[in-house]
Image (tube, rainbow, N blue to C red; front, side, top):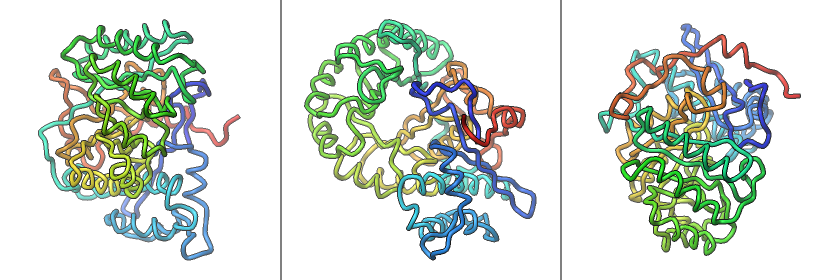
Length: 384
């Protein structure tokens, strides 16, 4: 388990802690995975033993198995932990293990994971810069976000998402601002990046009423947003369906959904336009690929969520490579992140070209290397 010693409980950033899973084989290969959830409870979910055929421990179910069969092992882990898993934490823990298993398979066969997942459907991967500002007032927040957006353009990004979290239960630094502040911040960001930059906005579940949300979305229409992320509370599927039918801006959601069955609800009842599976939270590459197939069947876009470290970014890139209907992946630029785990945990990570894209990974497995100095620096047993 890793922890930024300077973590801020009021920050809207889950990159302040991490659980890094290492799976070792008897041939000396180590697979690496992570998941964006509470690392202490995920660790307990993995290590805890079980005494019931449907309540077994994940670690004990993996020991002695063939690591080159990640899809079969996913099904075994899911079925064997139905009593304690099935949704939420159980899927998150399986996701970290599954990510590591695909890394092992790629390393064992000497191939990048995208070649094992079905082959590339595109010549490169296009990331968008995910930007979280700082500040304790609307003016500070607005100016910080606009400045980060300008810097993202300078770094070569052709798209970016503005985290406009100033209202609602997850507002940054306990801000609680009127809807007009959201419009003000979006307008400032569009002015900062110009008209050619593809811009998304995340308001982090800030509205409890779909009609109120629609009034603001109509005000934001002139700013040409690619999507509006999570405007409503997670389980308001009828509200999402209402916005699908009325909003001038496409609606995106799915960062917290665990497993394909929750995405069935989100896409069939909530009718979101853009599905956002987080590779770890949705159950790893095995389950993420199933969600992508479901989205293709329904004519929906996939734009994966990823707010953690270079480990998750690497896994997300491989998912995107094999998904034709995935125009972008979320990419937290290390140079624009306050989180040391994002900046330091991996070395020689995926990098932008001058055209603002990421070439297909060529190294075996997930294709990154851990920074073991950072691992030692941030490893903790307990949080005080």
